[in-house]
Length: 425
Ligand code: S3P
Image (cartoon, rainbow, N blue to C red; front, side, top):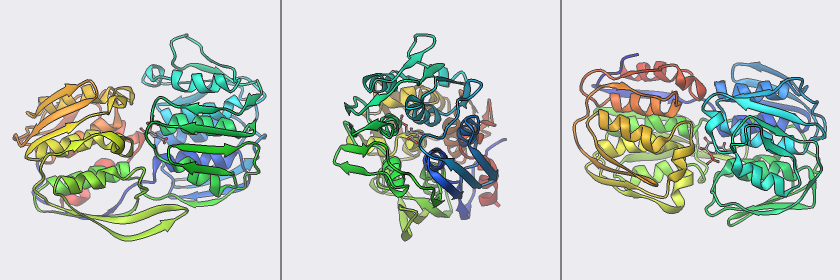
């Protein structure tokens, strides 16, 4: 795959289903009674890992591309898996499934790829242990492989030191297996798909300010869910539409939940031409079509409460900042260091290699935009979002942009490069 400068970028696209919502649909369907049907499911490697973990615990799941049918066995219907569960590259699978496994009467274990074995799991080990769970990092390094389950849980209130939907969801899911009310308070609100969807399945979930709570032992009933397009995947095309010349893109059917949609505010703050059309609610989530066109962007500061609402989009926002005039400062984003790669380091290294004036900081980056970018071979560190963000940078760079691993978008956006091609012709 070679990306070169785009002379025009025009068209109408849809992006694959939301990754966070797809994972949750499978998990919540598996522990509900009756059938859950997902349309628009993200058929990417991460969500396939979630399906295979629940199949390994006896759940009948059929999948035909983006159509998934889950025959739930109820809250207490999972079987003990005969092998270690394989979570692949997926942090969401690891942390959310751990909450469910903590509440099972059997002990199970899970592991994933090299990247997963470096991601911090102390953040779920601490609250689950407070709930009385057995959970152990088998190498005693706070990371996977993990061994979990077999002990009764008690409801707790947990003050989370990080704004993480994965931590919040893990504790709320464990709370399904505890008597009484389990609650989590976060320093800043993170994405709320678990709260919205579990409530749709029949759980008693409340969100008040920074606190989400759940009542244990609910009856969950299978649902039909239309999964909207993933704003984290739309983000690449939002950025491309704003920074490329002669660009005009309509990205249809995108989830615009405010706990996810920070990139829209940032695009506006940078002077981007972006509008939301046909706004509606689908399966309890806000959805819209997003129209973007070529814009003269200027730098801005991105910090504080907005960070969790655009955490996965920061690599491509950094690319927008490189194309913008003036300085963009990203702060309060130290969480970037513990994603699929250390994204402060991997974004800085690659943008520098393309000719951008960028400095890494402890909790973000400072980008002095406006330099001409030139193509290079991107070091992806097998991180899907690094590969895709720098493909977008390649669309405004002189010369060829290539990748040391061009397969990694398969994690969240299997047809990513094909979609770019359709807009160039
Ligand atoms: C996710 C939450 C975020 C995000 C990840 C998906 C989720 O992680 O980066 O891609 O589906 O809950 P954290 O909860 O660790 O911030």
